[in-house]
Amino acid sequence: MSSAANENMTVSEYTNAAWQTRKNAAMARGEGNIAQVFVDRALGSEVWDVEGNRYIDFGTGIAVCNTGHLHPKVHAAVTAQLERFSHTCVMVTPYDSAVELAEQLNVLTPGPSPKKTMFVTTGAEAVENCIKIARAHTGRRGVIAFDGGYHGRTLMTLGLTGKTAPYKTKFGPFPGDIYRGQFPVPYHGVSVDDAKRSLAMLFKTDVDPSDCAAIIIEPVQGEGGFYPVPDEFMQHLREVCDAHGIVLVLDEIQTGFGRTGKFFASEYSGIEPDLMTFAKGVAGGFPLAGVTGKAEIMDAPAPGGLGGTYAGSPIGCAAALAVIDVIKSEKLVERSKEIGAIFKKRLTALQERHPSLVGDIRAERGAMVALELMNEDGSPNPVLTKTLLEECYRNGLIVLTCGMYGNVFRFLPALTMSDEILTEGLDLFEASFEKVIQ
Image (cartoon, rainbow, N blue to C red; front, side, top):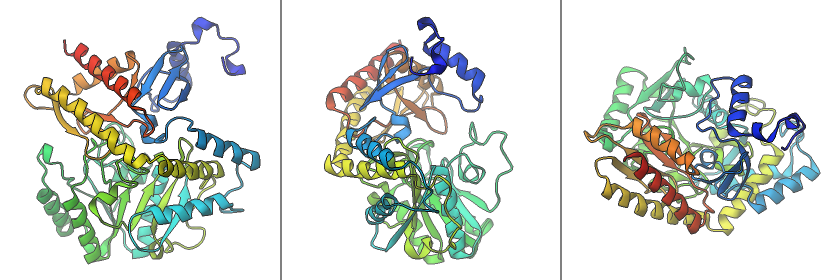
């Protein structure tokens, strides 16, 4: 028992179920949890709960711990920073680590244009600030997002998010001047040409290009189902934005820092974003987020127009510098591709054994892997997905689901995961699958 608050609990009370009861009584219902697993400690690619049960982690806190839990270099960097100071506010008395991190991000972000960076604390803040910056730069109001996109839980980012339940239910009205186009998912019948026509129609019916400040898109949709943007469509968006003076915003919150087999997923399409959000994997589990973009666009807001009390936390910046070092020194971008290839081989074999249940497999973007479960008639199968999710947790495997239809498993293992643990985790997934379909 790790704190004074728990000193009166007996061993029999110190269980996942007991903590779930306490959570339900103490925390808001809206902040739910996927599994009744209360973590006691985590290291690398493994997690242990309060009952001592071990789990292999295929979720990494939703693509946050790309370098694994408590990587030694990240741990050392944070410990050293805590010996110096924990907070001063970068907008009051700044510090070297924030400047150094901004310098590195300006170089790492795709494209030849001079870049600048700003820091905040959460991914939703990063997205909101992109809209502010784009509007300040263009003097326009309209913003275009896409079906199935996920950009956060604040009111502005919920307006951009293209999935209703559970994120938008009961929370409207949302900000105006937001428009939504079709996202190309050929597997579900939406072609690149369909998406192009949808965007053209928006300009005819809802917002004139001359009044459009930004187009925002995830290079690989996260919550929407792990669908990568076809390169052709991403390049089309770049051309449209260039033609009309629109700011192209790439939301790389879930796809950044080696996750997809590139340092940033937008590198696949060979385009340069005007603005790019980052968060999640940047700081190895410590809260940090921000925007990196073309310097002339980033400087549109006046001093004081951007920031936040905890923006660019010195702890987060120290962790992020260590994360970037680990990604480079341990060649984790390359390792991400290797992990993706292993997943593809194993999941394809599962699909071959059960072609009526295992639909599309998406493993072309490194260690950001998806598997869709279907009914025999070809429709999405959220019931089997939920049943399998629960069985995985019972067997010691942390996994996540997503998708517009609730039928997609998303795999986000640490990029430091060994082949041995990866194989063990895939064995657990297959065994769980075989059990629930009996």
